[in-house]
Length: 455
Image 1 (cartoon, rainbow, N blue to C red):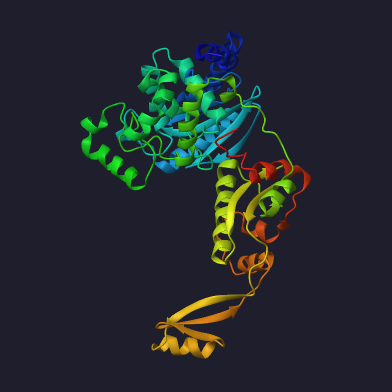
Image 2: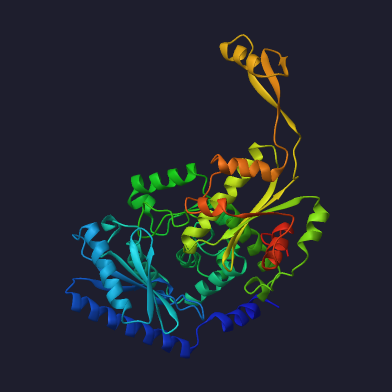
């Protein structure tokens, strides 16, 4: 199938129908009306702004999340914005179907209306990047910039977004570290089409810096500071925000996710297929067979899932998985991979390790023998010898991996997410076994199919 045929078939699935468009327009009109009524009832000087993919008409069919930003005057103190913004959000949400309070830089309201998620977020009514006070303020400027520059290439953005979703490289959340929707919009605006963005995958990486609004010429000192900071942090890509020279739009993008995009772009151009956009469900196998094939072992930490939103829970699970990995590596166990997530009411961390027991002794290097510390080391240890000037001793250690882990947790020597420490203390530690609901997850992890660049 040629590229045009593939794109035509994909667009049929991702482009909103006229009926869907009517629904979205009605939805936004109704929510906007309810917001204006609530603002009037509370006597506030606030402007409601729709932002995000609905407001830019870059949303995918079936994806109707609404982002309504409540813009307060610049002279509003931050605490007042937080307090009155939350009060206003609740007043609007009470006219909808249901709501809960969520937390980012400041509290906001996440509601449901006609089956659609609606975020009601307080912000400042900014006109330029110099007005920005909080992280969310730029969203109004982003929406305005995209609408002024997209020039009918909305479907090209849809194609890029769906492609990134299909290859699992979409989403700028810290637990994904992929391409944001705004970054996809900028790339299409910059290079003209979905296909051109894919063709430029290698060029974009080598060019490193993308500056759609020429900030390096208009505000060289500020823009160069942004570039230098991101280069020092070894970011794969620097896209100077078209509305703010202080910000790299791709700051959360990881080398891994750009690498996936790099390879998959080339593969698609060589052999176009709908499967890049809508990949088949990965085949499931037997995780125990994978362990036998590899000769490794699976350690799983299973505990009650804390009542946290994904934006908080998943980064903390990732931190904890890294903490377990580093702690075991320090103790002489080799960790080949880590995995984390949740299934139903349970959260889990999986570690693939080289063995379940270590030798009963380890060699402990000491100080130089002619120092005070050297004499103290000599007195405290039974089996001591010299290599050059340095003393060494043989120490007995716990052999079993679970005993090692329990001791490390008890001594707070595993770096864990702050909301997970107590839950981990009550966790089940499973060796080479997972319950039924995690068998598929364990297989995908151990077989590398979860993150594989091929197949």
